Every structure is written in C-alpha cells, then in structure tokens.
Image (cartoon, rainbow, N blue to C red):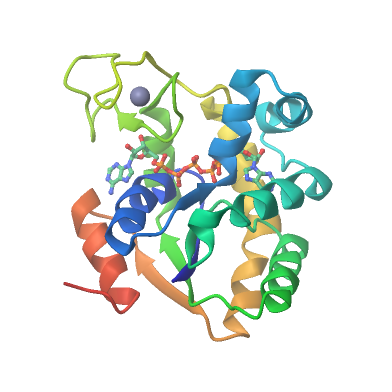
Length: 217
Ligand code: AP5
Ligand code: ZN
C-alpha cells in the first residue's frame, strides 16, 4: 500500500506510523526524521534544514522533494510506503503525484488524523525523543519510558526537540493550517482522504486507522 499520513504537529503521526508500517509491512518514511538524522550527522542537507526547522517553518521544496524522492526510490519502498510529514504543501503534493504517475503507480489512501488543538499542545509539551533515533518517541505522562530519561528501544538519552518550545509550536500550527491543510482538499478531489479521530489510547487509534484503511482486524 502507498499511504500518506497527515495531521497537525503532535497529532501522533510518528507514533501511529511505527505501528501501521509494521502491521502493513511497508517502510515508515518521515521527512522530519530524515532531516533530524541529517542534522545529527552534520551533513550539508542537515545544515540547510536546521534554521527552518528551529523556527517552525517548512524547509524549502528544492531540498525536501529531492530528499523524499531519493528515499522512496530505495528498494524497500518499491511496493509501498507510509509517508509521514510529506507532502506538506500543495506543490509537494503535485510533485509526488507526478513522480508516482511517471512510475505507473498511485496512492491508496491519505489518512487524516484529527485532534483538537489543546490536546496537540499537551502531547507536544510532554514529548521526549531519543538522541540516537528521533523515531523513538515517548511522553512524560502518556507514554513513559521504563527509566526516566532513557530510551526503552536503544538506551539512548531522551530530550525535548528544539522546535517543541511553546512559541515554535504556535508557529508550526499556523504553518499547518496555512500550508498543509490545503493538501487535504487536493486529495479529496482524488477521493483518497479517510479522516479518523486520533483521540484515545495509542492502540485504539491504531485499530481505528487499520479499519479505515480496510485492513481492520
Ligand atoms: P515533523 O517531524 O514532521 O513534525 P510535525 O509534523 O510537526 O509532527 P510531530 O513530529 O511534531 O508530531 P507527530 O504527529 O509525529 O506526533 P508524535 O507521534 O511524535 O517536522 C518537523 C519539521 O521538519 C517541520 O516543522 C519542518 O521544518 C520540517 N519538515 C518536515 N517535513 C517537511 C516537509 N515535507 N517539507 C518541509 N519541511 C518539512 O506524538 C506527539 C506526542 O504525543 C508524543 O510524545 C507521543 O508519545 C504522544 N502521543 C501520540 N499518540 C498519543 C495518544 N494516542 N495518546 C496520548 N499521547 C500520544
Ligand atoms: Zn532510542
């Protein structure tokens, strides 16, 4: 399956993507995680992305689209993928449409996670991620690691993302409304959007998502 996950910052896209990708046997491709890995490795791409991310703005399309397409061209994504955080504006969505069309394939669904803004703020304020791998995600209240400050998956140190401070979160929400939400209409016109509530426990949301994708247990 080829799936796009969309929803505001802190909706739980990364959390759900980890389970959905496993259940559906497809790779989880997060442009945010790819950027953060590049930043921690000190690559040129990471240097280009960092100032935009720290300010809560989108990284320019010239950098982002090429990076996402390179990742999708890897062999593990030949038969499907779960995109998390890409596309994030209409021009990225159009670039993805073109690229899939050129390969003679198409998206199966765009899964839209709906969460009220006050819950998004609670989720982001308590989020802690792993220094070794930003896809290892915890929450100080809702998803506590066994030992405080230590990643359950790899033993790495947990920390708060630079863009998770309050003023940057407000900026990211504004960017989401202005630039990312319009892709939902773009995909509605293609009949691809399924919207679910992302409130409730993580496993309840996963079950709802699997059912919405037609793969419910
Ligand atoms: P990115 O990393 O994509 O961030 P985001 O979209 O803002 O999403 P988040 O990672 O904040 O949230 P999430 O929905 O994954 O939530 P999570 O699962 O962690 O992007 C960061 C930046 O990179 C952007 O601002 C931009 O600069 C740049 N960028 C990335 N892609 C780009 C693109 N395509 N174009 C341009 N720029 C791009 O969950 C949040 C918290 O809630 C966690 O602590 C989790 O434990 C908890 N939680 C999750 N589910 C539940 C639940 N059901 N109940 C209780 N708690 C829960
Ligand atoms: Zn870890």
